[in-house]
Every structure is written in structure tokens, then in C-alpha cells.
Length: 289
Image (cartoon, rainbow, N blue to C red):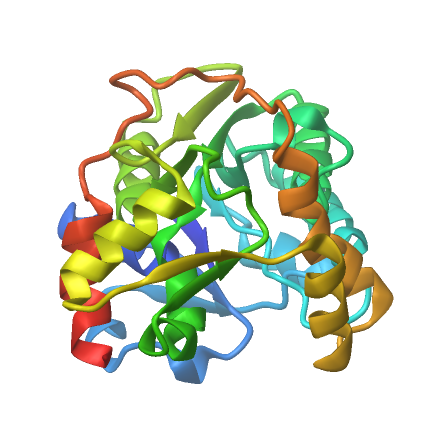
């Protein structure tokens, strides 16, 4: 069994690699910079130098693969949605030309809207491109990553949790490690057929008001949730040097999913994962405070 994995040093991809190696699989890792690979893994994996935005490199790196874990890398400039479309075209070509039997794609909650959810629209387009291959494809519609909080350490140290989401809106919050568990399990079983969608919702839906309480208890501090307006977010992103397409992509996610969005997959035993926000905060945020 030959399994190819993209973004193998990321929060989710690294967990997928770990579990595959522990299961006795020697995965093929697509890496733009092979030098970033953990030295402990070098004898247990194959590395294919590949930029996911380069169609030839993607096809070459996945040649001979039976299964594929695909994560579309985040853009750092330009139009994020256009980059997602580009990588989606590349992976669709690789699946078709190489006859890859099963692909697990890390998508996002909100992709089912198809339009009007900022950068998530790009993931929706990848879903459509993968579906058009006719291959066996699983879309993992993931919730709000706990690790997003690592970008707000200064705010948390100052006692606030800023967000553009309504403070009373329940959201599916999830540990990326748990997404990796689901992805690896589906890659290793591989008996499923056709197009499938599976949400990864974390253990419970949490509002930002409740998240502030949970984080405060975990960190031993008072954390105040603060709602930022869409205009305020856009102004801040622009002041930080982001271009208009990046600003639209980032701001559009919360704006597009804040008013009446209902996930295609309801919360049930197949979408609920174990790690709580409190446990994650104790393990990962508290040592940094």
C-alpha cells in the first residue's frame, strides 16, 4: 500500500504521518522543502520534493500512489481562492493520470455553501474538482482549529479574546490532532467507495463567550471575549500589509457563516472527536503564558 501525504509537517499532516508510520506504512511525503523533515522520520518515509502549485511535480510525486491525503496549502499573498483552484486542478490531474484509488481531502465546514464563505470557497471548488474525477473521494469538513488561538497569544496575555464571530454563535471547535486521527483511519481502511463527506466537529459546539470562560479557567486568568466588526477586521488586515484579495478571503469566512449557516453533516458519533478545548489549552496554551 502506497500512501502519499501533503503538508506532512503541518498540524494535521504530521499526525497523519505519525500514525501511518506506526501502522507499518512507509508514506510518500510531498514537501516543498525536504529539509524541514524531522530527522527521526527519514528512514521510515519517502520524500518527494514537490510544490503543490506545480502540476508536473504533483503528478510525478504521486505516481504509483494508491491513496492520497490532500491539504491545500494556505496562500501568503495574492488571491487565496485562485491558489486553491490551482492546487485543486493539480490534484485532480494527478488522481486521474495516476489512477489513485482513494483520496482524503481536508476541507472545511462551510464548503457546502459553495459560495459566499471567503477563502472556504476555494476549498469548495477543490471538492468539485475532485468529485469530477469520478474517483473515490472523502471530504473532511473540519471545524474551527484550536491552534488558531496560537496566533492570539498576545491578546490572551492581555486578557482578551478578539473575534469577528458573534459571541453567542455556537461553533464546532476541533483539535487538528483529532482530524489527523480521522484522516489516517480512513486512509488505512480504504474500503469506502464513491464520494463521501464526513465532518470533524470536535467534542462540542462552543461559543466565543464560552471559549473565553474555558480559556480563563485553563490559564488561571480572566479572559474577556471582544467582538470585532467586519470593518475593523478589514482595516486591521489592510494595515498589516495584506492585499484586498487576502482581506476579502479572511474576512469573508466569518461574515459568510455567521448568519443562519447549518452544517450539512449533523453532529453525531461519526463527526464528534474527543479532545476538549480545556484539555488542549492546559497542554498547549498554558505553558506559553
